[in-house]
Image: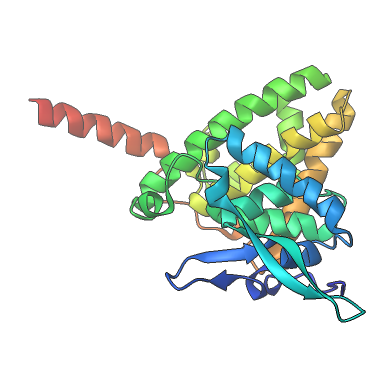
Length: 277
């Protein structure tokens, strides 16, 4: 099995397939190679964890991971039937989430597959039909839930100063910028929520940082405020590197929407009052 040395956005695109109906899919054996797992036995364990996560999230496992057989020729020219899986994008996302986090390619894969699969409560078609502002509201709601869950996990790890803890994550993702620095760059008023003033892509990047930090705190059983802050900074920095590796726009370069979500919410409320009269 040839090891993949180039970490760029073409890795996962190059092994993507499309069926006769235009549906995209990946093959587990090819994904195994891309993620640098030399033994199918070990990668099969990752697939089993992904199946469990899929079931727990309410998805139909057999629709996301379809078992397929394929023929393989051995060194002695004998042809044998080997196990493989036809994977949806969501299945691939679950697999990279459960893969070895020490591999640089895994972090890249998590970012690549996360873009389309963080929309857990909507189908792709439903999400695509939302307006840009509606997508912002949706992603902002996910970040609120994510931050709440992260705070609970961080509290158990011994975090008391949550401003410093969250700033550590921002510094990693935003190349040293704190929440205040981000707010100033965006031209926001004092204490105005920076997350309410992000576009969809910037919110997705932050949601990824939030969820990955929570997982690291749990997986590594992190204890102590300093260690928790170090983890948050490290995760933020790795997410930033992964975005750079796939040729994405850095979060600080993303345009700030003209109106905050709070402003849009107020406009909705006023419009509702007018319509009720």
